[in-house]
Length: 131
Image (cartoon, rainbow, N blue to C red; front, side, top):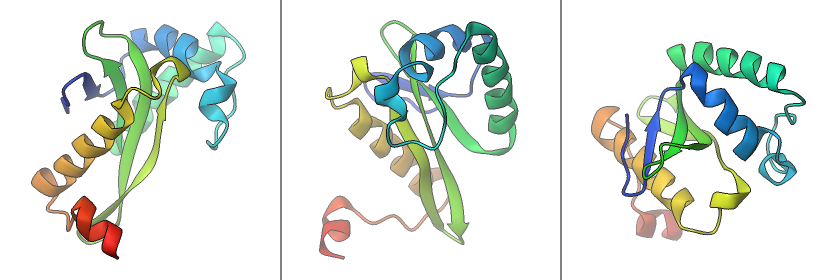
């Protein structure tokens, strides 16, 4: 579990299907730049959360929860591309949660996790801007 100031990034639970369905999976704004399709029904959402749970058992994928309410509002993940090098596998927040600095919190939490727990060679924001 990762815990930036206003969020919690944790593994999916079956009960998350409803919040993700409502906040992310049915929202065209959420998938505009993503490689997944909108979820058409609640039954499809229940199937999708089961697939998400299975995926997260072997991958560094997380559901993003609003800390104050516990509501699932998005997802994020990382993958190792070479020794000590990681990249994101997508960061998605529901449109009602965009523009509030929450995406930055997700990125910073993932960078910190990579640096501290995965021995990643992470550039600082200033080093990245100069590269």
